[in-house]
Structures are given as structure tokens and as C-alpha cells.
Image 1 (tube, rainbow, N blue to C red):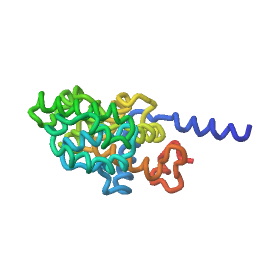
Image 2 (tube, rainbow, N blue to C red):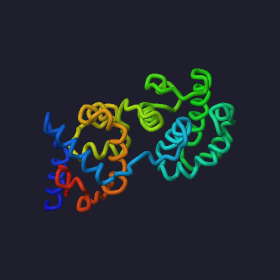
Image 3 (cartoon, one colour):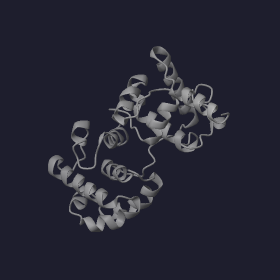
Image 4 (tube, rainbow, N blue to C red):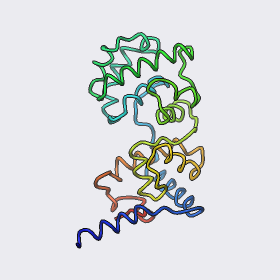
Length: 229
């Protein structure tokens, strides 16, 4: 019995979500503290242009950024532009990206994306959400990564597993669907902060707010986090 009660109490704290002005105040405090803690927060996928970022982001599904960054140099050397990737043999691409997992589907998406960019956009990665999300392998999350980091356009908030987890733990939303989480976060933060916000939450999730063993004692948000132990 003694072991069960604390878990119930902790779960209740994590379910608490503030409302109205209090919620926006909480959000701004979170952003301020994370900006101070991670002044260098940025996209950790290695890339030199929008195409390389699109490729890296597609590869990052169910895979760590570290692993993707180990794979992409050889891939980019083999296929230096969108035209080369569009003409690639799928088996050759599969061999280069195999360690990222789901390599057959990813190879198909990469080649399909490149072909679509060539056919529909003259070889230039498009700069709108509407044009990006219809490319093979590109959903809203990937489109937000590309727009925010390659083009400096804040069209939304990237919601990965870290952002989803921290959004719940910090009491920002009870939503569990990535798109609904994004819609809940956008009004809470200034539009110019949307791209950076994702990086701040991801960096904090990787370094402190671990999925299984969050290091609450070392957390800069412990005084305002409703889930702090």
C-alpha cells in the first residue's frame, strides 16, 4: 500500500494543467529558464542545406540524431544533390542507411521525395507547409523542421517524443496527439520562439528530463514543474 500511494499522487501532479493567463505565464517562465540553461540549443542533425536537412529528418524517424549523423556524410557524398538522389537505385540507398532502421521504407521515401522536388519544384525544396507535407516521407513534423531550421520560418512547433513528454510533465497540455500538442503550444509562446522552443525542450529532454529517470534534483525547472519529484 505504501508503495502505491506516492505513484498515484505523482500521477495526479502530472495531470494538472494550468489555465488561461497562468498557463501562459508558466510557458514564458519555462522558455526563459531553458534559454538561460541552453544558450546554444539548435538542430543537432548535421546539414548544409534544406535538402540535406530533409533527408536527415526523414532518417531520424525511430532513430537517434547521433546515428543519423554517422550515416549522412557518406549518403550526401554519394548523392550530392536532389537530381542524383532522384536517380538513385533504392538498393544502394538502403545499403547506406541500413543502420538507421526501417531502411527500405526510408530509402523509398528519400528517393520519392527527391523525385517530387525535381518534378514539382525544379529541384528546389519548397518553402511552404502545404507544398512540403505532400512530399513522400514528409509529414508536419518534418516540414516544421525544414521550415524553421533551413528557412527561418516559424510555421509551427516540432513535436517529437521529447517535446510531447515535457509538454505533459510541465503541465502545458493534456493532449497526446502530436498535432494537438502543437496546436496547444503555439498560442502559449511568441511565434518567433517556436523553432527554438522545440530545440530547448529536446535538449532538456535528452540531458535532464529523461523518459524513465528524470533528474529533477538537477533541473532548472524544478521550482515551477508540477511533476518535479
